[in-house]
Image (cartoon, rainbow, N blue to C red; front, side, top):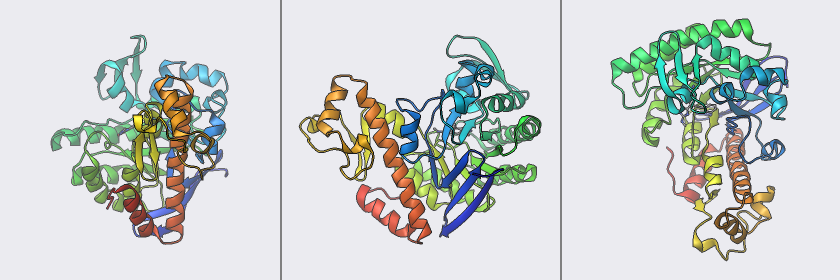
Length: 375
Ligand SMILES: CNc1nc2cc3c(=O)[nH]c(N)nc3c(CCc3ccccc3)c2[nH]1
C-alpha cells in the first residue's frame, strides 16, 4: 500500500527479476500473474476465492465494459472496484486489441478506431482520449495507452507505420491521462514493432522519450509461436528500463511465462487458466490433463491433495469428470479455481527461486516435471 505508484526490484537472477509494485490499493508481487476479469468478473469465480489463490491484481476490459453496462454507469455506481467487489488493484486494457478481434465494421484512422458493437451493432468510436476517459471512469489503477496490435506476419514498412501510429496515440493517451487520472494511478506505454528488432528499438526509444512508469510489450501472443515470441523478447527486454515494470500482454501458458520471466518480464495475463478450466482442462505440476477423458471416471484422487485450494484438494477427479460429463455448473467453477491456484503457485515458486538465486534450479525442475524447454 502506498500513496503513489512505485516498483522496487528486490532480487535478480540472470535475466529474471523479483519485486513489488506498490499502489494505493495494494501491493503486487512480481513476477505476477493477473487473472482476466474482462466484463467485471473473473468468470465462474467469486472475488474472495480469486484473492485466496494469491492474485494481487485482476484485469478489466475497456472494450467490453464501455459497451455493457457502459463506463458512465459503472462510475455512477461507485467505480469498477466497488461494482465487482474487488478492493485490490485492477489493470484495464485500452480496448484497441479487443476492437480488432471482436467488433464488426471497424474503421481505423489517425483519430482512433470506429466500430460496431458485437453485442447490439451500436456504433462507437475509441480514441486515445476516450479510452483514457473510460479507464478513469472505471477507476483502474494501471491503465494502458490506446495502441494498434498488428497481426503477424506483417511486412516491415506496414509494421513501422502501425508502430508510429501507436507512438502518436501514446502521446495523446498520456496527455489525456494527465488531465483525467487520480494520484497513484499509472499509465503504461505499449511497445509495438511486430517481430522486427529495429522497429521494437525505435518504438521503445520513442515511448521512453514520452516517459511512462511502466511498459507493456504488445503485438505478441498473436499466433507467432513460443520460439518467435522468445526471439522478440531476447532483443526487446534488455533495452527496457530496468527499474520499471515490464508487462507481456496476453501471455501465456506456463512454459511461456517461465521462459518470459527468464527474459526479464514482470507481469502476465492470459485467459488460459480460466477459459481452459471451463472446458475441462486442468493444469497440474506434470502438465495439463482433460478431466473429461474416460481415464478419470474412476480416479478417486483429487488434483492435488497437498493443495490449500479446496477445488484442488477436496474433490476427486472422478467427481470432476462426472460434473463435466453431466454439464453441471460446479465443474467449470472448480476447475477454474484449481487452475488459478496452479498459476499463482507457479508465480510464487518463481518469485522464491529468484529471491534465493536458484531460478536455474526452478527452470530445470519445471523442465523435468513437464518436459517443456523454456530457454
Ligand atoms: C492473447 N494475446 C494477446 N496479445 C495481445 C496484444 C495486445 C496489444 O498489443 N495491445 C493491447 N492493448 N492489448 C493486447 C492484448 C490484450 C491483453 C488484455 C486482455 C484483457 C484485459 C487486459 C489486457 C493481447 N492479448
